[in-house]
Image (cartoon, rainbow, N blue to C red):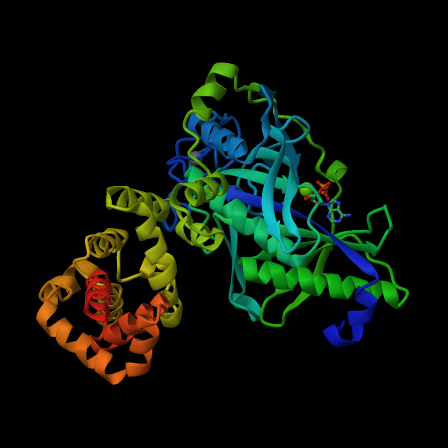
Length: 491
Ligand code: ADP
Ligand code: MG
Ligand code: ZN
C-alpha cells in the first residue's frame, strides 16, 4: 500500500495517534537466569548451553539472584512499586528457537508496576506511565542461511536461550513518534545509569516493539492497534511509527479497517509489512511455573537494592543546574553518560571556580565540538584539561582570548589542553606595562574626539579605549591592567 505524507496530511489532522512501547532489556549478569551458563555475546553457536537452557526433560531451573536484583533496581529507577511476591508463569508457544515450548515469564503478578518516565515535550514535561516491569528468559536465535533452492537452511543458536531480560511495558500515553523517541532515549539513559544493562541495540541488549493505533480526535475509545517488531534503532522506531500512523489513517479514510496484527519494518523502504495476526493472551495459555517458587523480594532486600540506586539523570541535571549555574542544555550534554557527568563534577570540584569550568563548556567547548561533528565523549580536551584552562584564566595567567587560541590548537592537533599548553611554552598574558602604555598612548592620540568626551564627564568612553587597546594587543593583554592604565592615562 502506497501512502504519501502530502496526500494524507489534512486527513491526518483529524486523527490522534496512541502509542505504547514494549522494551526488552538484557541484564548484565555473568550467567543466565535459570542456569549457570555464560551470557557472553559472540561465543561460538551453541557453546553456552546446558540441559536447563536446552530444555532437556527433567532439568530444573534455579533462579539467578543477581538477575532479580538488577530487575528490581531498574524498576525502582523507573519509579515502579515492587511487588513483594511475584509469580513466574509459562508462556506457551511453538517456535524452533524455543526448545521447551514455553518461555518462563511473569504474567498477572509481575515484579513491578505503576511506574513512569518523565519526558520533555514542546509543551513541557510529561509523564509516560509504565504499566509493568517483569523478568523473563530470552529465547534462542534462528539464523536463516542461503536464500533459494535446496541449500536454504535455518540454523538455531541457543546461546541466548535463558539470558535474563526485563520487559518494560508502557501505558498507551505516548502521542507522537517524537515522544516515543524521547521516551526511549530517557529510558535507555536511566537503565545505563543503573548499570544493569549495556543497552547495546546492535547486540540485541535493547529491543523495542511499538504498538500503534489512531482514533478520531476527541474519541475516548482506542482504535485497533498494530505492533511493529524488530526495529533496531531509535531513529527507525520513530520512522516506523510515523509510517504506521500515516498508513492507518489512510486505511480508515478510504473506508477500510485496521486488523490487529504484528508488522515488520523495512528500514530501507521506510515501510511496515503485515507479518501475522496478533496472538491474544489466551493463545499463550499462561499458567504459574510449577518448577519455581514464588519470588519474594522482602522489605529488607528491597532496602538493600534501593541503597545502590545512583542519582538518576533527571535529578542530576536539576542539581547540576543549581550547583554550577549552568543552562538546561549544558546540563543535558554533561549528563549524557554517567561517566561524563562524574568526570565533569570531579574536575569542576577540583578547579578554583567550578562555575567557570561549566561556563567554558558552554561558551568554548560545545560549539567547537559541533563544528567538528564530535560528541563530547570524543572531545580532544578532557574535563581535567578544561579545569586546568579554567584555573589559568581564573588566576589571570592567561586571557580569555589566549584560552580561545589554545582551544583552537587543541582541536587542530587533536590534543588535550595540558599538552598544548606545554607545547606552546606555557604562554602568559602580557603584564609588560611599558609596551602597553605605548599602545594606549597611540590609541589616545588617534582618538581626540573620544578623549574630549571622556574629559567632559562621559566616563563610559573608557570602555572604547580598553577595547581598542585589547584589539591592538591581539588579546594578549590583561584586561584588568588595561583598565587601570587607560583610566590613569585619561585622567
Ligand atoms: P497485548 O496483549 O496485545 O500485548 P497489552 O495490553 O499487553 O496488549 O499492551 C501492550 C502494549 O500496547 C502496551 O504498551 C500498551 O500500552 C499498548 N497498547 C494497548 N492498547 C493500545 C492501543 N489501542 N493503541 C496503542 N497502543 C496500545
Ligand atoms: Mg504484550
Ligand atoms: Zn544453561
